[in-house]
Amino acid sequence: MKSIKLTFSSFFLLAIMTFSAHGAVRQPLKIDSASVKKDIAWVDSLYAKAFAQQDTSLFLKCYAADGAIMPPGRPVLSGKPMMLAFFNFACKSGVRNIVFSRKGLYGLTDDYVTEQGQFEIFDDQQKSIAKGKFLTIWKKTPQGWKMFRDMMSGDDAGGLGGKTK
Image (cartoon, rainbow, N blue to C red; front, top):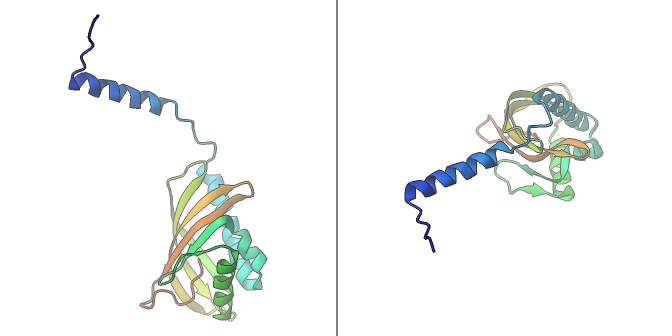
């Protein structure tokens, strides 16, 4: 009976071939970044409209069912009651309009993408009340792209002067 003896270099070569073959069967992305950007822009406009109209149903449509908001200095807010408490607090604080500015999309897959950007928040007189930055992980759902994890911080020393996305 023959004995098979693997040397370290043989084992290394076998491992490389295995991983290379695995990489060769990757499926191409089914989406393109232009369509993702368009969908995200639509949700951003819906988000701003939710604050302008103080409409909780519009606000919730922006988030995946398992979404979470991660405001500065606070615990993670997940579930509809916690997310609505966040929305109601922001509305009571005077938030009536939000303008988003995308700085980049990263890690685009068929299921997730991370967006980096800046925001500015306005009151009912269109006076700027806060500015800051955000990172949002978007999730592809049967209803389209929705916010999955929404983390933000304000540019002011206090962290967030009313920012909601």
